Structure formats: structure tokens, C-alpha cells
Amino acid sequence: MTSHTKTNLMTLSRERAFRRLVLGTTGLLALCLASHHAFAQEQEVEAVQVTGTRIMQDGYSAPTPVTVIGAAQIDAEAPANLADFVNKLPAVIGSSTPNNSQGSISAGTAGLNALNLRGLGTNRTLVLVDGHRSAPSAATGQVDINTIPQELVSRVDVVTGGASADYGSDAVGGVVNFILDKRYTGVKANLEYGETTYGENPNYRGVLTYGTDFDGDRGHFLLSGELYTAQGIPNTPRSWNNNAYFKIQNPAYNATTNPNVPYYLVTAGAYPSQTTPGGIVVSGPLQGNYFGTGASVNKLNYGAVSGPWMVGGVVNFILDK
Image 1 (cartoon, rainbow, N blue to C red):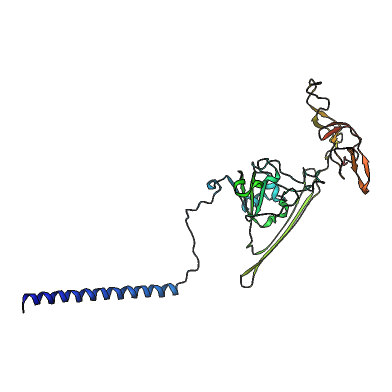
Image 2: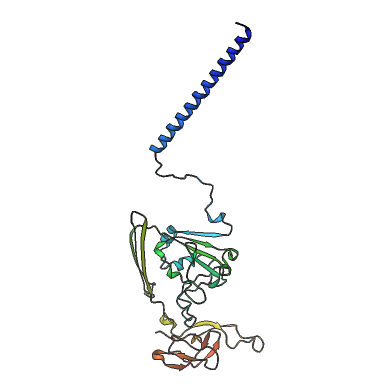
């Protein structure tokens, strides 16, 4: 046998060994993949728990300042209504409440709990429910927070900076987003009663919430009802104030003709001049006509008027003794 033939036989043996190695490796890899696939089919994943994430969710990392109020904070405070709790935030200034809006009868905003962010106006504060605009409660666009089911609120996100670039001109003051727990399951009830130290302003609150799944967890039924009433505090809550002492701007003060008298005056007999239980005409030829019980029309006998107040006059319809 020649050396050339020996060389060809050695080359052929190497090629056969290489093919055997490749075929054996491919078969082993296919067997491993098949076993892994069978194992994956047998071991179904029931749940995935994330123990770490790079997604930042705190209010400080948002593009605009955000204050986040959780359900635990709301439950710890136990407010009579949700608006009272949100109004305690530093960014909320000058909100409309039932206590300060009782004179806005003709405007249709009496009794509203409308939030006011940064003092820019209640119609410049956008109220969202689960990220969607809430229906307005008045023609001027204010949203009454009392229409939001308090027992279903899981979180309140308050954008304390202007967000008009994203939401429009009604978000110049900021945005308040109420996040609801729409998957609540079970039954919960709450009964509350409160009054002042002097037995005034008795208020009652009752809440009933029920949630359940149906149709094999493909549907969810949720119902929450709330009843709240407060009798308020009369204009003269203490007997020592039956003489209606109040600090008003001095009617006699004039920067040009009479600047030497005090600008403010603490006086007895100070009563509202622009508010009556049935409404009053505050300007024009019919100014001073107010409406009493039984659709009666009366004429207010003004005293010395100083802005929304007057000293003296006929005030029997105002006092609540």
C-alpha cells in the first residue's frame, strides 16, 4: 500500500468520525429540548411574584409633584366625608363646602364639596375617577366630591402642579384622581355619629357595600350606598353671642375723607347684608327684596352696610335663636 493511499484512508476516517460526532451532538440536543418541553408542559406556572422592579411609583419621581393618599391614611383619619380629608392638604385652598356655599342658591352651587387646588378656583381643578373625567355637578363645571363612593376609594392621587398642558384649561390648578377598588368582594358596613363638644351639629353617616363575582369570575357585581346628614351650626351658636358681635370693615372709614378712624370695627349687631334663607336681590332697582316663607316677598331694612355685612337693620329672619 502506497503512502498516498494511506493518507486518503486517514482522511476518510477523520471525516466519518466528525460526522458521527455531529450527529450524536444533534441527537442529544434534540433529546434535551424534547425533555424540557415535556417538563414545561407538566409544570404549569400558577403565579409570578415580582420581588424587584425598576419602575418608580412614588410621587417624587413623577414629572409633576404628586401627593398620594392611600386607603390606610383615609381609614386612620375616618373623615365624615372624603372632601374634608382632602381639604386638609396644604395645596388645597379655598374649596367650596356646604358651610361656606349656603348663599349660592341661585348659582346652583349651594352645598357642593368642590376642591380648589392652589386657590385658582374650583372650576380650574380637574377631578378624575379612575383616570376619567367625572361628570360636573353644576353648570359652572364643579364636581361634587360627595358623588364619589367613599368606601370604594383605594387611593387619591393629587397633582399639585399645573397640568393644563396634558388635560386642558380645567386643570390649571391641578388634578385630583380618585382610584376605586372595583374588585372588592364581600360585605362591609359602617355607622357613625358625631357632634361638637356643646352638642351642636349632630351628624349621621351610614354606609353599606357589597361585591361579588359571578359567571365563573367573568363578571363582578359591586354596590355601595351612603347616607350622610349634618344639621349644621346656627348663626348664633352661643348665648353670649346673641348680640351678634363681629369684626367688619368700618362703614365710616374712607381713605380720602375719613382716614383717621379704625379700618376694622368690632361691633354688636353685625349681620349679613347679602344672604337670606329664601334669597335676596343684591343689586338693581329691586335691591333689598328678599323671599320668605310661603313665597312672601319682603323688603330688607338695611343698616350701615360694609361689604357683605351691615350694622343694625331688620334681621329677625337671619337670627336662629
